[in-house]
Structures are given as C-alpha cells and as structure tokens.
Length: 128
Image (cartoon, rainbow, N blue to C red; front, top):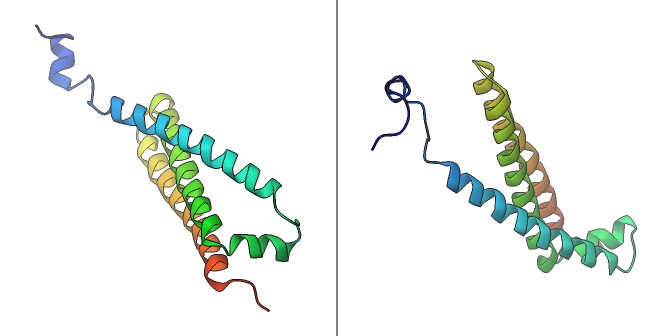
C-alpha cells in the first residue's frame, strides 16, 4: 500500500528518512548539556576565587579543560540543530540554502574560537 498522492510521489515529496536521527541528536545533546552545565555550575561555585588568575589556574587543569570543551561542542551542536529546524520549517525558497550555509559557518567559527581559547589556557598554564 502506497501513501500520498500520485503527484506527491512524482515530485518526491515526503519523508527524507532523517527525522529520527535528527530527533535523537537533539535529545542526546540536550541531556549532555544538562549534565555538563550542572558540572560547570558546581565546579565554578567551588572555585577558591573569581579573579582572573584564579579562574585561569582553575582552567589550566585537564580535568576542567576537557569537560569545558565537551560543553562547548555539545552546546553549539545543539544550537545548530535547533536553528536548522527553525530555518527548514519557516524559511522557503533560495534564502533557505544561504541561511543554512551562514548558520554552519557561524556555529563552526564561534565554537572553534571558544575551543581554541580553552585549549590555549589549558596548555599554557599560569605564568609564575
């Protein structure tokens, strides 16, 4: 039994078979964001001080830098997936492709800046 109208089948309208994967990625990144954000809040609350040198010393630990990088990756991937859905649902025509390209460049560039910043602090440590 076939679903849809004959015209819809000819035009190729229908499921792209990607909805389940997209949905799972959205839920997994949401769960990761929850746990990593809670870790971040508890870790920053236990910091001995909140001045620049204290936070830089705190971030120079590998046990802090790695979860921070994971938090950045998860948050920006979740952000990209969510905005992709908004663009696909509400934007039509040629501008949809342009917006998707801009979204990908923006999320990649901002996540890269954040990750490089974290790694720079982690690898250089605190000057004595």
